[in-house]
Length: 183
Image (cartoon, rainbow, N blue to C red; front, side, top):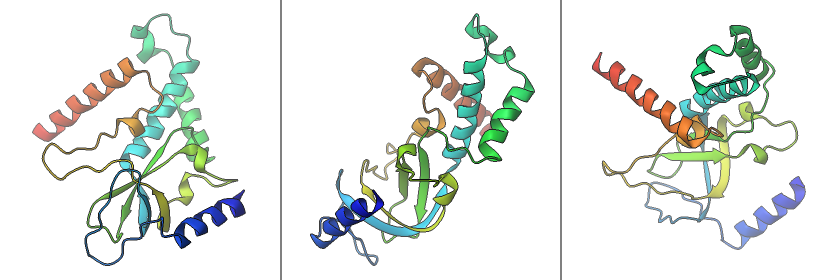
């Protein structure tokens, strides 16, 4: 499998189908462009918190809920500790996307890399995607630098959550952040 993928990638590069920005000059990018970048990757806070929210969701799923109002009182601290140990001590790869920030690339823009959990091969896990790496992927979004341009991390923070609960929790997170800014 790995050899087949490598041959396909080598063929795309040989046919100049892959954009490879170099230097500080402008590089015109469009959605769905195939691009190769090198830089220093790090897992974003959105992905770290997304892991915690996923663990919390898994604990909630294991609880026997009669009503959504019982949500906060349905699990014990040991349930949460067991979930945290599974992920953080045993390095369990969760079925949620990982968002990386790529620093030091040849592009003048901030670059984020979305890694689907199905793209990990063999025993690879999320802790192997940080560091000095070369990334090959497609451009999915271009966000302008205006005050209207923003990037929502909801997909990585609350992956797999039902829309109503996700929006409710995100609103509460926004309120908590506003309170911290005012303090």
